[in-house]
Length: 567
Image 1 (spheres, rainbow, N blue to C red):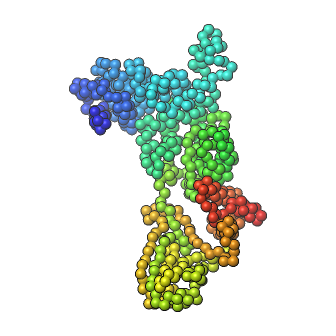
Image 2 (image 1 turned 90 degrees about the horizontal axis):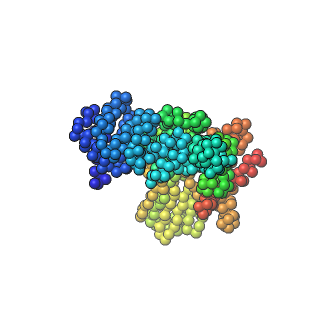
Image 3 (image 1 turned 180 degrees about the vertical axis):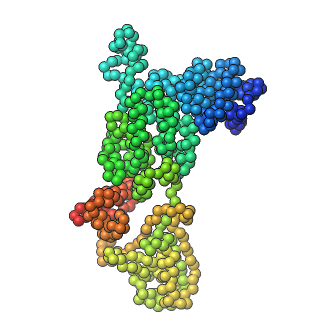
């Protein structure tokens, strides 16, 4: 049977089970035959749809499903038929928020069909929530499908009391070995159960009703694989799934486990900065703008994190200290302010998800605010030498056949606005915006009114805007003093120092303040933001170096800190 046929049959069966018309004898037999022929994955999909239906409907509609299932159970004869109906009934109960009934009915399904994959996974969740880790582990070992519970179960099972060996006589005096007696009820430290507790929340969220919340969030992002686990965490704590888990299964948890989850609920989504990375050992984070250091002993995280990298997520705890149980996502330093402002506003989970949607195209502009273009126009001119000499009187000659239009800035730098280049009888005008090109053309025509246009090019540097407000990056070119050294390293140093000198006194970096003014402020929030901005500068420098790209013209964060400290 083709995959599409299977899907059509499942949809048909869901319609029959949720329809208001009672199943007749023929309908019951059709259903039971279809359930017998269905694969485990098809049964899992069908029962998940019923769970989702009962989670979204009222008691009347749930009663319709229960009546249809009762009719099927009364006519089921083979073990396969009874097991399939029991699985669907268990998931219908789960959808209604009755995990206890679901657990009991599921046990019937596994008695009838011990290898039924969807039932094994559900049973493992229930057993782990009840604290029966050995049974949960046994269920998963019978399944061929990976489970997020495995790592947490292994940690919890391994954390047995250190003074009693598995094969030692049980201290209770039963005469049996500890592993076959009280070890089954032994409680590992809460820190050894924290990973499993979070995995229980995660597997609950990944059930069909939870996916109805998570999937739309993931679809808002630019990369489903990258953001899936972050959106799961977002749906858990912002979408009400933790509350539903506690309502359905909280009675199985130990008091300290429930308190741990309730503590997690009070931890907000936060923007963190990695302030130190000990490779293969730990990462030290701090919550921006000025949180205390948080050291995470996390080998895997330390292998991918970099100093000053930003992460958005939730650092939880395991009763002994902080722990990275929820997967964070990295955030571009260029969007730090934007995300910090969003998180401070008390956003909805949809607004947070929208932040990770594809960014609007970056708009490149010059310092006049014009959109950046690679544009030029070539003119044929009579008397090219005379025309060029007259242009020299108006503009600045920068090469044998080139004159440039420049602007002196208050900080001493000289801005290059465009050039006119002579090639034989032709003069080519080039600039980085249409407005500047038009101004240079005017100057050329003032000198040579008879100039004839031969060729024109204009290519926009940015992608076309899509209607959303995106980031704007200012790009410009400057002249260097002709008497200065032409050594590449010295040129790079000069460009960086010129940029630093200009930036330190530029107003509007933080509110209306320049960096020097912000450094002198008595407001801790302003000074914290200034530190973050200089960290942005350093992070961009480090990222550029790691990528093997030139750092020409980039500011030195160390010199900036020294300059502000002196002031």
